[in-house]
Image (cartoon, rainbow, N blue to C red; front, side, top):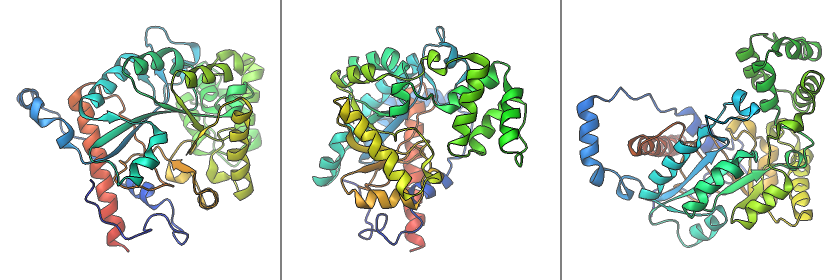
Length: 372
């Protein structure tokens, strides 16, 4: 069991105006880069591996991994050549899962509430999640997971599955990477002249998130893509309804990522309810009942607001998931923590990430308790 002792309701009560206090505090605690490891240190680590790595090296808790795009670097689709955010190669993905299985037992997200009702995990457990419903989750990630008996969760959006929209960040990456930065900058400048839009491809791509305007950014990026490159649906970025139904039959859990992936901090109370409830209704009409888990689009503390918290308070069976780091050492329904293993490729690399996330989480708890 975790040895954390916290005042009842510390992180999940109506007077926590600063919600999400835990996720925000974890994000502020960025692990410092480690010094290069010498040859002799690497050798010592290898010799210690049988006793230095394993369950005993990590505290009990739920370690939830977040993935987006899993790619074959030798056979990239067009959009995968340009959109590289959060990607991992299929071989590295397999290596990461093998490392996790060495030390932990996998768990499905739907099992988490019961796990905590029984008092919490006595050993470290891990779960695998995917955001945005990208098509390579089916063709590349699924076979790796199935071979290892892992039941993952994919957070899905109705607009993407229906083909009505494509994640605007993917389209912005394709536009800026294929020589269309100038016309995209011009269109953004026309609608938002107060912002110094750059025509440098990398800077402009970053600005589409940094200077995000809800609905407007999506509309402009889609419009310019259609004018210059055609139908965004032809990129085949996202899983369609039939493919998601297939994954569910294969054992995947399907969860709510809102109807259209708008950043929730830009929405009011009614809009938050609408995008969450309408997405659940859409999938129910397709014969898919979503598990009661909401993945916040983009997943950082800055990407939610009080309206999101109020929605969760009024829907006490719904669990909210971030993606900004941290390990679940306690049951915290509105602030489930997820993290990425990045490009870790070895057992030592994976363990370093896990330990770093534990340190960040414990430091966050210590800070929160110190200011109460």
